[in-house]
Length: 292
Image 1 (spheres, rainbow, N blue to C red):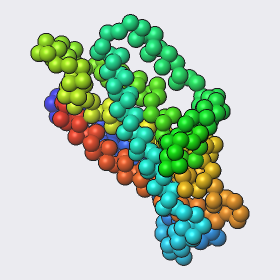
Image 2: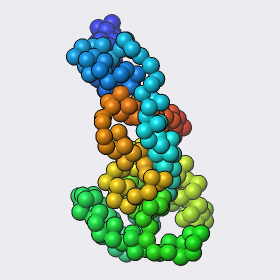
Image 3: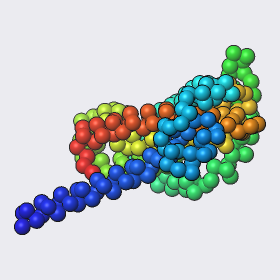
Image 4: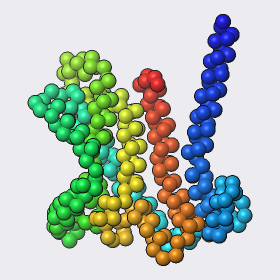
């Protein structure tokens, strides 16, 4: 019986890994196609799409599309803008939303359930419905710069950051995670005389590694892929992010090899961020003893 059970377990393990490998291959195919296409001239790129040659570095392969992409648009500037806006927004969002969730879960105050319900209700409101009112507000807000106090936040980094620091989804993730933490830890800390900021900083947040990684990945993807809002509030080239920069490759003659090269370059920060947080996520699970 023990041998049969061990054989069944081994078979299930083989099937599981086979299914996961198949899923991984399916999901990686578009990335391989994009990378291989970025190395080929347009005529060969379109011809290779009719066969598996589209997924292999065969034929006239070179890095000409990459140099052409840099010549057509300020690629490095667009990537810098997106990484800057996304990075700052992610950090501020994790701080603000985790503090808000901490107040909702651990601090008793009148009306907190109603406020949390209102915040969660914003999840069903499409951004397109509030984009125009938000644009009007942003255009009237005061801004302090080298020229003194001016009116309007348009054509700036902060207009792409501030409206997205707090959101209902990130607060909801933190609230759900904090509710699962042992309440005895908080009670013991309060008995020992710890203040709420100390409990937040020294007890709750060190245990919040998994939700921090999850929220950071979701926020990073949402911000890095922003298109509509930057298109509305940024007219100057110096502040444009990568998704708005994609328009440069469709204005006149479309060179698909250059498009693929541009897409390959702007994908690098996303993959790097995901791989880094994946390692941090696994390390945080191991350190907190959470089992999946």
